[in-house]
Image (cartoon, rainbow, N blue to C red):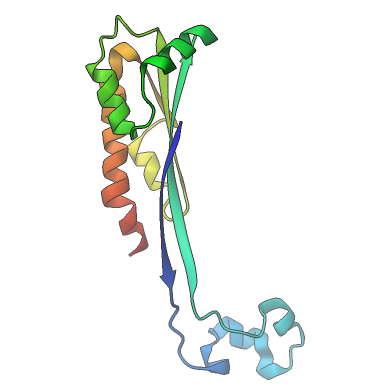
Length: 157
């Protein structure tokens, strides 16, 4: 099961003027007062007035079992129409002795923005727990949820 949270915004760069005045010092050097024929081929002949930038955090909940029948049995017992926190709550309220022996592996990835920031949240690329240790996975999901709500959007300011 994959869940994602995406954030995007329009960006309007500020230029110091129009035409050649909008070029950076490196751009002006490359432009060579219009004598460099390669300038338009390489850089184009229009200024980008705005663009959209974005990023996403993907949370994967991967359930594994020793055989397909156990996994099928588990899927019949749990509703997956919930958020990751909702699934953790369902599993926490369940009696572990009534659930098949299934392992949960949580993987979290961030694409874009400060994608290295997610590494401080989870020291490994994934967290694994058995259903009898669901509180460990719930703590991880709560950290991820907090990160998505509080820290992730601030990476664009």
